[in-house]
Amino acid sequence: MTPRVLRDSLLAAIADWDQSGGVNLAGDTPLISSGRLDSFNLLRLVLWVEEELGRPVDATRIDLAAEWDTVDQIVGFVARHRATNGR
Image 1 (cartoon, helix red, strand yellow):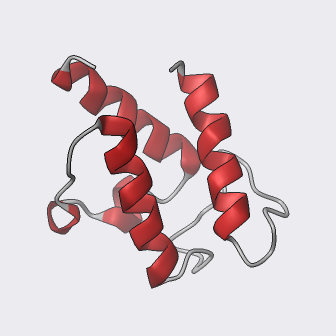
Image 2: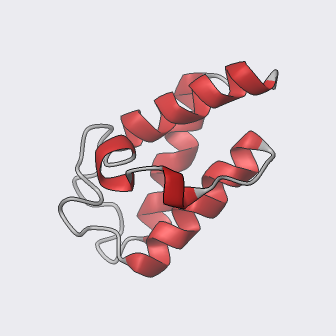
Image 3: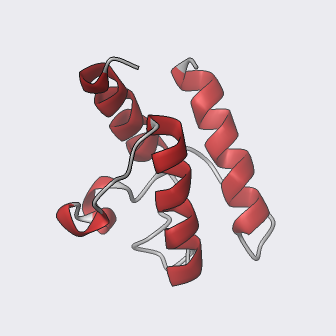
């Protein structure tokens, strides 16, 4: 999956989870630091990333607010970890 398709997929997923229906959601929209995603939706996000990577992610080893605060950061994380995982 290309980064653009991955980004679009994640934007659609977050719009589905988000109480605002994705209003004003862009690649650089703060998700965690703004409180836009609650704890339940953070779990959904971790599961989404795990599905994209094809393996579990230890979310306790990641500073989610720093590394996964925006869609663009999450897509970058997935792309980097896919490259190191050979997927």
